[in-house]
Each structure stands twice: as C-alpha cells, then as structure tokens.
Length: 159
Image (cartoon, rainbow, N blue to C red):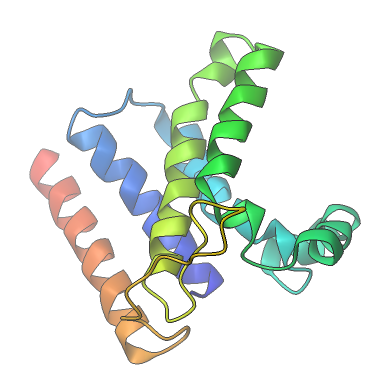
C-alpha cells in the first residue's frame, strides 16, 4: 500500500478503537503516533517515506533483512512493545504505546490485503494475505476511502 493509505488506515484504526471504547483516548498525540506507527514497518525499505528520512537505519535494515521481512511480522510488534516496556518511558509516553502498536498492526493488515502479503510468523517464510488490493490500484483507494468515510461518519455521530 501507499504511504497515504497507511496513514489514513492507521489513524482510522486508532480513532475507531478510541470511539469503540477499546483504547484509552490520547488526544491529538495518539492520532499522530498512530500515523507514525502505520509508517514504521516500512523502515526496512530505503525508498519508503520513512526510509528516506531515516536512511541510516533503513539502508542497513534493507541490506540485512530485505523489505517485508522482520519488520512486517508479529515478532516485530512483540519486540517493539517489549522494548517500550523495558525502557519504562513514564506515564506520559507509555500511554502512546497503544496508538503506536495499533498503527503498526494496521500497516500489517493493510499489506496483507496486497498480492505480496506479509510474513506474520517471520522467520517462517509463509506469507499471509488475500491479494485484494494491488498497491496503488483502484481497490486500494476504495478500501481506504471506505475506512475514512466510516471513521468520519462515526466521528460526526459521536460529536
């Protein structure tokens, strides 16, 4: 999926989780962190939006792991949460672990909609996906638009 799609889906996932009572509201910071989390798995791709900005991290990751490897797995999610828990960032930053993780998971779910799928159980090579949305294709935009519309509708209903 494209960068805009990942951001929209990550933010939508977080807003919907907050509105459904599944997440502790974290205000605008939570939305921003969900968007960041939705971009984070592509740190392994030097040409990605985040990879171009963090190339000292992205290039070595790409050379060692390739794209859609470890960073597109549940192991990365668990490892990231373990690191966050180990550094004990304090209550101000700890409340942002939820939006970061949900944004990250939204990226994995979105990429699972593409023909390439994702290696959720990395290092096992099996990829999981349904091949519904070729990257940048019409179906991608329809899925993203549907999620954005549902989120906007829910926001209007709640306010």
